[in-house]
Image (cartoon, rainbow, N blue to C red; front, side, top):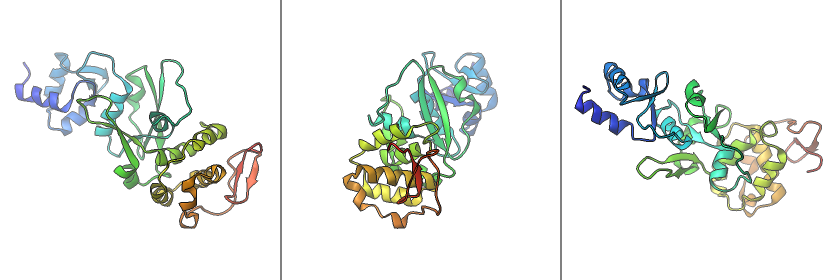
Length: 257
């Protein structure tokens, strides 16, 4: 029999719909032998070595992300295209059964992440050159998705932050054309948030590309930005291969744009 007090503690730590690891449960005070016995009695269901859930119903990606946000040693947020999609700003229709999920963190994501469900494809993005951890944890630049009423909300990047994250993937994973379409719809961004993010970001490429797109669409908030206060580096940056040089921001862009 499992210890009644430990059983109750486990239920508190691991609501249905979330996942956990053996390491994290031990860090929360559950003994290793209790965890092993819980696995043997199927109180805990093993998803991968050292990774468990309590619920036999299929996992969804929101539960996995929420769990990861509780356990990971550094902040993890949904960002980039996934965050913009949650806001209805991505100009992107999901096709097929597998949901692409972009996660941003300064430390590597666990190897088991893509082994526990076939319904999502998780892609990790390093923020070491993009954001300091202080920005990653700053609630001013985050939004919450209450995906299940009884559970803590899932955190994702606000549009101002998500757009800068997305631009770090142009043109390898995101085309210029797609980024341009998204920027066209971002007419209500907060210049105050943008000011702080553009000063904090370490990605010269993302900042220059953001300013080029913002100027191109001439949104009302663009006139409040102060590019002289952002570290934009020096010299030319080739972003579009064999593209045209934009001399204002010193980046190459597609000739047809």
